[in-house]
Image: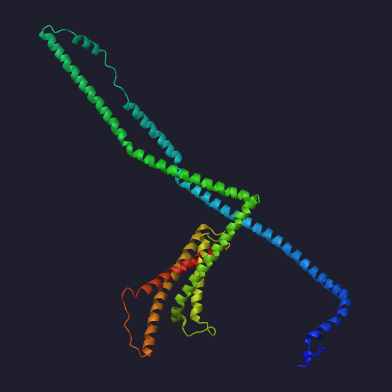
Length: 402
């Protein structure tokens, strides 16, 4: 208590003591103002110089980082655009090789058939030949007035009968000829239908080529903007990168949730395989580590599958040929399928373990064991666990894409 009031001149009056001490110290403080100002100024200079150097270094680092980020962003955008252009060219080449390589032969066949059709149409449009010269003589004989002579009438009757026979024969010949031509034209109907379908398909392929060409032009315009270092292209790429980062973060959160559900789904039945009483550390069971290893192995196989399908480019697989790449795809997919089947079995085992554990607790508690319902309603959780066990490995396979 005494040490707290030693500075007071009048312990019973602290305010007066403080005022008197301040008045006594005021001349000394006034005399020491210049040295103190110089010391503060020196300390400020000593502190300002390192801070100024640090600010310059940070500003230079920020410029370098901004320039590097700009280069990386433009390079990534250029690479993505070129991949899109490459895929469009591959699609165009596939369409040309599959559908348009036989177009010259089709065109020649079309021209030949059109020529044949034109000839048949010309034949169908033929006019009957003019009447022969002897018809004039017949007309002159027909103008003879009947005289009652039986010989002349018999001759005229024979001439009329002959003309009728010739007329019927000519008409029948023309009808037969036109029927044959109509049959020929009718036989061209299937060809016209096939030709219509072929031309429709060619038109659709050409329209697809035009769309692909428009996409290629748009992507090449982006490449020109990127090569010209246009600010608009940089802003567009920055916005796209930000959106991709946000979407990738959301997908990763969903994947982490799926991995957690998968871990809880198989950690309990794994205790029957690796031992439920084995502990690696104080609270870390061996079954949990085994379940985590299976999940990581599924993710690894999914990563190799996405890499073999060229969705990702995390490994240097550019020198791998297509045959080896297909083998990698099938091997990774087969391992994923096997792991999915294992998880389905573990899901069924988990349901059985839970049922046995519940029965054991009821037996130890001397409670009446209630019979389990074996209806279809009781099998819904098991079916759900089996579905999750089969689908979650394939869902984790897509984690590598973001």
